[in-house]
Image (cartoon, rainbow, N blue to C red):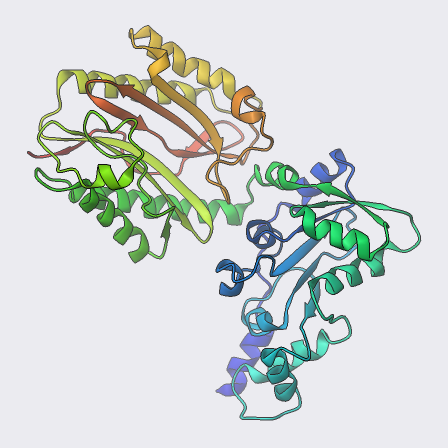
Length: 431
């Protein structure tokens, strides 16, 4: 039985890449980059699939780095600590060049691995594949991350002159450039990575779909916790418990961004808002944000305690129609500002005040607000197939409170797919 398990570990396929390599190389060519280096935990995960708790928990500032070269004949590399070796046995990276580093004289984990490699101790189902991987990585091992990265560059730079390399952390880039004595030109690649990540791969879409499913259920659970005399905090607790119970994480301290009542459209002092007791007629804003395996989920719905007023029903219908009008225009090649204009036309066409309406397009993925470049926030951008986008329509009425609707949609070659199955109806809680 042990032999069967060991063989299963040995033969486990490397993780399916999240990164869109074809798009990444096209973006690198546009920015004249020879490689990109991701050391922030999001880009490290995106490039390599490597996400043990040592990285996810951010125990140190920089725990590893992944290198994606522009040339297809140069192997991508993952540079991480010996501490992650067992994780790499059970969850191998797709990247073909694995470079480990360790402070050999100070690391108990590295010392233990050397003993296991020498055959000391009992055998377990992990020991044989661990020894194999340990042996396979010794020739390229280094003392620290800087040494591992520089070793990769020294192998591939050759005598071809200077490379332009994009780093998501310029501190690390500066250290590598200094060690390599100017053989690379360091470029800030923070938004290069975001530009690459705007178009999603199939594995990313599946993560987003699962997140949307979790958020649907959690929002409904939050709605069930709303009742006359209850606090907003009870609603928030129900949401958080549901997300965590399904294996997700809520964003920030709470996961719910707004509260209830006539002040629910603008109060961001959550401690104050969540202590309030709900009464009949209170409008409830459910703006629910969390993550599933680092990929974000973001949905908004509006509810009411007791019978909704005619004014609330009207506002909700207008907000829903505005969101639908914007989404109806979505397809590859369309500019997001044109879609926004369609929503604005619905708002003004019903005699509502556009200045009371927040309307925001944003990509979503490893960031909850994902823009290829900062100007996209105000100037918009051209939609491409396989982008995942949210359009928020939030009307802030001084008497009623906030009326908010939002969903994540996936852009298909001919239109869009809604990732949420939750109807866009008022969530009515009996008084």
